[in-house]
Structures are given as structure tokens and as C-alpha cells.
Image (cartoon, rainbow, N blue to C red; front, side, top):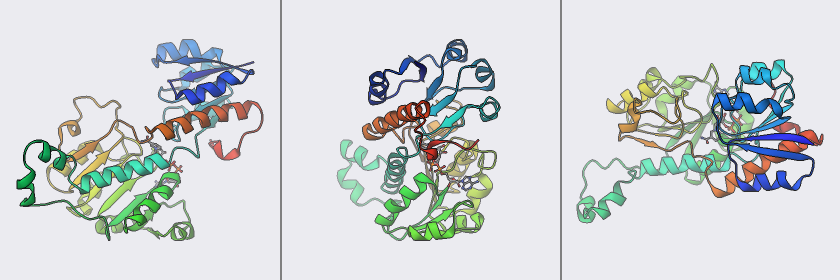
Length: 320
Ligand SMILES: NC(=O)c1ccc[n+]([C@@H]2O[C@H](COP(=O)([O-])OP(=O)(O)OC[C@H]3O[C@@H](n4cnc5c(N)ncnc54)[C@H](O)[C@@H]3O)[C@@H](O)[C@H]2O)c1
């Protein structure tokens, strides 16, 4: 019998899978405080992890732990060095967490290019007629606009199809992806990020948070961009510098932004973007569709079952 800690609630479809399998016993842990995790987790052989931080101190105490199965693809909430040192395998939901995020990027782009909730408010507030003669219409068509996708992995490759469907011109910056892959999907590979930033209308980020990508898009980069440009970040908070973004929006250095992720989650009142009307915000919700959450919960649990039954698809393993 393997003991599995389900750290943070997941969709019931994943839990049903665990319940059906006699070889596994599980406990859902909803209190994500370090105090609780450090006292509970040493008893388990495997962990499924949605939110919750598993640091080196916790991992040092987990002597039975063989595998962590992330509900998601980012793993900045786990101490990688300690996983490696203790020979713990890290798995991700490699096939199920990209369609909804790509759709979420489109939701943000469409919302911003069509005036956020402006029209809805206008109709409700009796401004139906006056909108027709509106001056300074900032709405724009997506057709023929240039989008730069930074990070051309699973999400980037789903996003390009959606952008091409809107007749956009798609550029991709990802030093680790071959030009032929980008071109075969209808994109143009970019080698010089700064040069491309000068020319594009929309920048969308789908990179992991690493030392290299932290603050990758700062004020200096925003100043290179067109004044009409829009930045969308669904990847991780900190890839776009929040203070710089606030300054760029306030000083009309760029036009708009959409953020699903924040340096500190949930963001505190000290975050100036919470009161900035030029940014569209969502609560780290890019995967929050019924389909995506169900499929991710199943994949998270199936990965851990496959690990213990020696049937694991290698593409789910993160190379540490
Ligand atoms: N908001 C959400 O709910 C949500 C959901 C899914 C994923 N994410 C985030 O989005 C990220 C991307 O997801 P994915 O599934 O496409 O991951 P992925 O690993 O398939 O793709 C990431 C791509 O980024 C590229 N990359 C790495 N460093 C780079 C750099 N310095 N410059 C340019 N490209 C770089 C990699 O080569 C890779 O192709 C995840 O790491 C995760 O943090 C967020």
C-alpha cells in the first residue's frame, strides 16, 4: 500500500481514480502552512502538489518520499536541489495544461483589444447612443497585428494556432526551439528579442520562471515597444516586473496589459496594479475550466499511479 498526500484540493475526477485503486491510500491536505506540511508529509510515499510550497527543510524530513506529481507544469514551488539530492522524481501534467491557458491568453487579448468591459458598462449605464460617436477609440482589430510569443513550448504551440485563426502574424522567441519547428507551425523565429519588441503589437509570455526569465520584461524593454503595445503574462509573476509595468501603463509607454499571475499571490494592496485601470487581471485562473481541471487532476494522479506501477511515460518526468 502506497500512501499519497494530495496537497491542495484537486478535481474529484482525480480523487476517484485514487479511490478505485486498492494499492493506494490517500489524504487530502488543505492546510498549506509550512507548519502543517512539515508535520504531515514525512508519512507519505508520494505527493500530488497543486498550490503549497515544498521547501528543502520539508523535503529533508520526508524520508519515504519517492515522487512529487505536480498538478500543473511550473515547479517553482518545489526545492529542485533538494529533490535531486534526495533522489525524488518530479512529474508534471505535460499534456493537459496548455489548451485552457492558450484560450485564456486569447480571452485577455480580445478583452483588451475590444475595450475591456467598457461596452457592457455602457449598455447598462444608458450610454448606448453616445458610444457610437466615441472619440479616441482605442479598440483594434487583431487581423494583421504582430504577436511575439516568448517561450514556444506547449502553451506557445497551442497559442500560435489560435492567433493564426485571427489572421495575426506570429513571431516566436525561444532560443531552445529549432527554427523549423516554429516555421512548420506557421511562425517566424526571432533571435534578437529587442529588435522584435520594437516591431510587435502584442507580447505574450509563456516561459518558466527561472533566474534568466525573472524580470525579463522590465521598463527598459517596455520602452523599446510601441506605445500601442499590449503585454500578456499568464506564465509566472516576476517574469514581467510589476512596478515597471505599472509605471509604463501610467506614463503611456505601452497601451495595456493582461496578467494572470503575480509576484506575490494573492497580490496585496501594496501592489499598484490592483488599482490600475489599464491592466486586466485574473486570479491565476488560466487553467480554470471544467475540462482542464478534470483532465489535470486525472493526469496528476495517473502519473503517480504509473510511477509506482513502473508504467510512467518519460515525457512526464522533469529532468532535474
Ligand atoms: N497561469 C497558469 O495557470 C499557468 C498554466 C500553465 C502554465 N503556466 C506557466 O507557463 C509556463 C509555460 O508553460 P508550458 O507548458 O508552455 O511550458 P513548456 O516547458 O512546454 O514551455 C516553456 C518554453 O519556454 C522556453 N524558455 C525557457 N527559458 C526561456 C527564455 N529565457 N527565453 C525564451 N524562452 C525560454 C523553453 O525552451 C520552452 O520551450 C510554465 O512554466 C508555467 O509556469 C501558467
